Image (cartoon, rainbow, N blue to C red; front, side, top):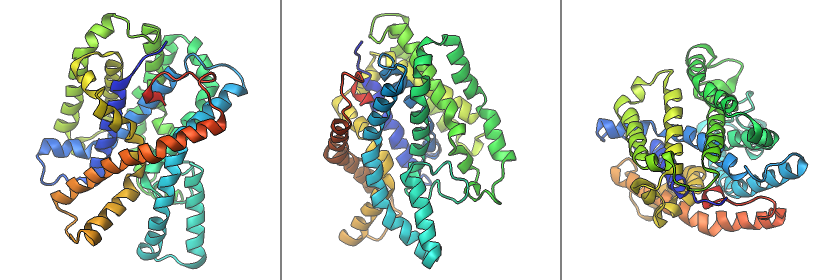
Length: 390
């Protein structure tokens, strides 16, 4: 069963792009609708977690098997996929982190060394969201926290992948979307119950609770349930059927619904129901685009969209250190001091996108292939289904 899910590759870039806009595009001068979309850009990470569950299920549906052999192959493939660019971003971010500790926080001597060692070790091991002793989750390359959560998903997935194949779909729906239905409860606890300061220094703000794998696990399980339902519906082929016929219009409906919800509502009106509604919308988008042959799907399957989608991981994980490099070029090389203008934001976003494409072709993909060869992860051990899964 071999099938291209190119539309999801293009959609992956859209999610990463919105996260970048959330971080770097000032929306004060934008119309309210556009400003609201930008301010909701951080929801893109939840989309990635749903997509991750869907993609892992899709890719390893046939090759999942009991035993340590599959686990080793799976983990080797995941390390080859995420580690090279993750550690490149980490290396680029270390000097910026040390400078912040010295200049902003005034650390020196043993305190400085201890902070670097603790945060550096936690981030290097991808456990920064699991260490509640110091504020480490965002400290060193602030976007890397999502990879810490993904690492937890990667750790547990091969243990239940075989059971997922055999489980009744109703059970998977209950696990996946039952968890999504619990998101309002978790969000209420984050906002109103859990501490924001005190002994758990990592949780000095409620965002840090959202950076915990337990909070994000429902998104991943929702994606797993979607993947199983998709495979049982299609057998992995783009065979004609109800969903294949309906998916084209539904991509427009669900895209418009997502844009309208985030753009018209705005983060100022965000409430405890927002994470659940966002997860449902993201699940609907993934479901529709996985089936679709329509015009919107074909746009996302275009060569340009595929390149951007392939580079979306580099765009996401490298954005923070690359932003500093771009700013230095803008101010020191080009001699322009105004970094708050719209022109700078346009330059910055363009720089990040182009740099991520270069990083993908010149570093991420070659490094991944070298690691795969080193780990001897072959197509005989793990069947490659599509580019988005590689």
